[in-house]
Length: 269
Image 1 (cartoon, rainbow, N blue to C red):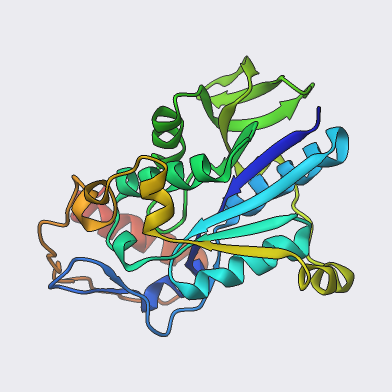
Image 2 (image 1 turned 180 degrees about the vertical axis):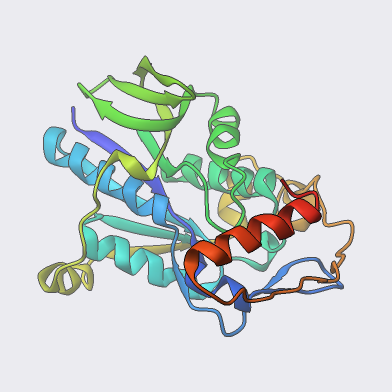
């Protein structure tokens, strides 16, 4: 039997423009006005891995995202890369979610979609970088999970093997489906959308789900969004900058000696 794979993706601020991001002092949330948005880089690698598994075993790939209406752009990109379907979770009730509330909404959506075998995620996002959602999602779904996956191999209809990166090497893990796997960017080189892929994506399904779908899957309103978030921003503090820059003139050798003398006077070395 072929695999039904769900790939969780997220639209995030482009890291090349992080210097434009500000924080709302009243809510503690990110103000992203004027900052270009992209699909989280690690999530693109998760999607690529899903497409490769589908090519090997058959089945379907569904891209799933939670966010405001513009997050549909990431789904359109995923469909152009080759995903079969897209699902966007869009509801004001989801706003202000921390990682746990996000995982609750994703879990509700997964349950409402019906049968699935494998969920793939990027190991972490560039905006939050917590790496918590994949493990929380697996716990809420009651399935095993592997994070920091650098290789998925020997896949079958019921299991696969995963190499999990650790500090001084890697672990080999045999994983039974259904399961959640969070991948590293080093796992593959992801493909780019083609003109044909973009044209074909126009006819593929994009489904929108809201709070009602999650509630029907057993997720309570108090578990979503800001209300369901046990972590909050307690305050924002702007640290004063007191840096001083000075150029040392002269030939490289003499400039290097002068730099060493100054660092020693400052007890920096």
